[in-house]
Length: 54
Image 1 (cartoon, one colour):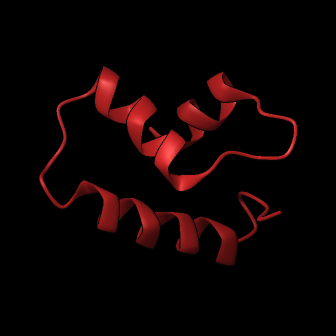
Image 2 (image 1 turned 180 degrees about the vertical axis):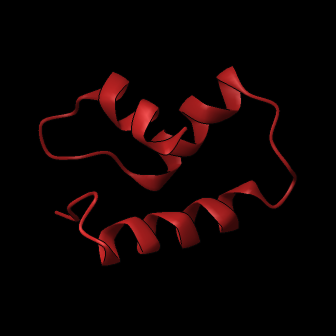
């Protein structure tokens, strides 16, 4: 879901966590603590070089 959101948003300077969260919430049913889980998954993706933090 995160990679889908990043691919669809295609912002030139990267996407903020709030923007990614809103995108996913509009398309999928998410848990109440989704934002916290999203931040943890983004940190993990950055750690394994799947995405780049700018």
